[in-house]
Length: 236
Image (tube, rainbow, N blue to C red; front, side, top):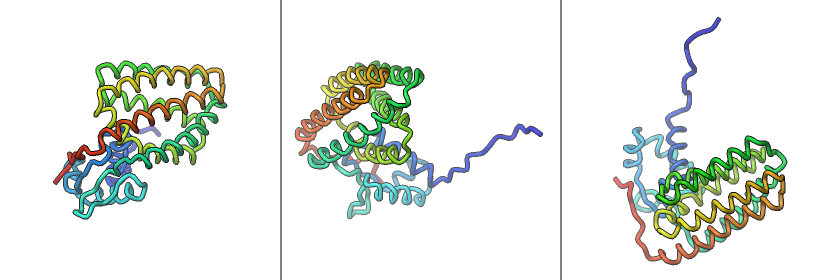
């Protein structure tokens, strides 16, 4: 017997709040060094403070946030040493995933990567930061999901949780950041062509170049903004 009743969303409020805050970090809606309070976050997401506290606890455990002495929370600020280490680990793990993905190439994958790269390129010139970051993230994770390695994907996801806030801060903080993302779309094109050939070495080289160029630019930005006071956009 059929029924018109549809399935309900059984995800708990706590889990939804966690996913929202996690997504805000990865997509750069919360930026490096930004402070926030439980009360203000609860007001922003429209819940009580309890699920927000639990979400923050999980994000602290994942290395994305720290708790300040004044009971506020802060996105972990980027430092030169942290940037170097994150880049080194990302190159190793994301390069591994990209190589694995070359064994699972099909036309749909190539078309999806091509579309996402085009969306990223189109969003750069008017500097629609959220669209650039979204397309860039989806481009990379389309490759990593194609590796069909859940544990590797989980590790990469955590690395992006830690690096996403700074990448967004850099894009919004410097007009010349458009150039590094514009160059990134060129490297993405090279990666797509290597992926279509199932050239694992070529894919890994392009991905490494993409990350290392961004890291080099990021280091310059980090040095230039070392004394800039951090904003506290989500306060009580």
